[in-house]
Image 1 (cartoon, helix red, strand yellow):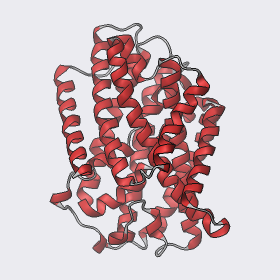
Image 2: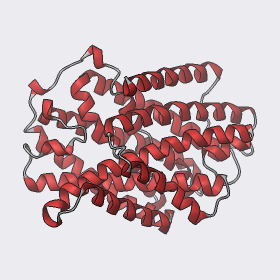
Image 3: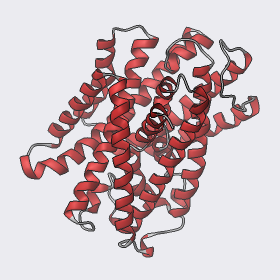
Length: 378
């Protein structure tokens, strides 16, 4: 394994293991253990397929772009601007979710020592993230490897300690009225779409390893998250909070709780970096906006939404997951079908895709989006 291969896997795992993870235990308490297993297996496999489709689009096209740029290249400017609106909504939603939960975790860690408001700590976190993104992708990739290794160790430690505290009475098999509730949060949690262009860039000289890196990154992250969620639900049961870690104080030692909060912060930092970098590159690469202005556009809008009071993490994650996993998934499928008809260069990744598969998945995504919109606003 080369250094860039490990960096690619770590980047994808670090992006996937993010804020979505902390919204899942709360909805699993309401829906049951069977939906947890079903949605994680099914949606991780589906996101892996979408990751591969996006990688094939990238490898079949010339130039550096994000999704709106590829849409313009293969479908014209109208498709580009429509995809821009959807992509920006999705990535702003993700960044907002990171600010909400990351600020909460930082507040819980430092407020007992230094005092200060929740908004103050959220602002500190945002400033740190924005500075790292400004430093560039190379620094991010190397830091991602170290942080992801730490994340894995903390997940395993929390899961090991939590197994002794879990009770079967805290689990329910399935609650039919809430059976669809985990769809949006889990679809959001297992998505690493924003970092696929960076993986292709890291492995530009080892293109034959891209598919393997995406597989390891996607399924390893999904497996670790499913283990973590199952243990947390077994420990906290009905006392599970919407952000998960706030509800652990009565069960774990202060030292382990601090480690859990650090784990949460590291997970959010790695994912938020990748998302803000992706948003900046949409403005910079695809719309030729000055890279410093693009950097400001990538972060300021979701930060202001936070300051204006958008702080319901369950609703933000559910709706963002349905949009990013659904509408953007349809865009990726459409582009993959276009690539099969005409490509600019040959890709080493060739996925099976046809009109029937594309229509079936698109219908599934639309139904999921309709449910999440109804569920969020009902």
